[in-house]
Amino acid sequence: MIGPVYFPPRLNSSEYLAFLQNDLFDLLEDVPLGLISQMVFQHDGCPVHTSRIVTECLDNEYGYRWIGRNGPITWPARSPDLNPLDYYVWRRAKNLVYTEEIRDSKHPKRKIDEAFETMKREKFILG
Image (cartoon, rainbow, N blue to C red; front, side):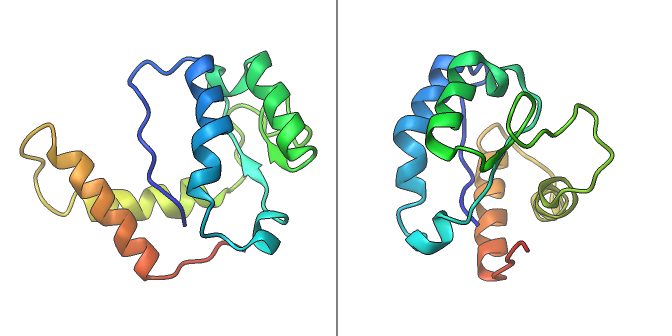
């Protein structure tokens, strides 16, 4: 499990493209190359994720190994299909974050970071 990653509240496609081209590889630094070559990059239907510059970057970097609207492996809007992000990661993170009342604006980020560290220690592996 990698993350969490925090984006600005009003993320645009240029900022997201910069993340894909610069920061994502740093996040994957400790992941074995053999595993990276088998990974599939999954997107939701966020307009930033489906912009032309972002989908071109994904096509160049991942070829047919990315899932998203307008991608080589489509993930239709409002799809009823189960996916591990929605049905495990976010549910587990919410359960960990909301174990106590949120007190101030910095508290949620700290609680989210703690939740992801807990999940990493649990060594949950998708697939």
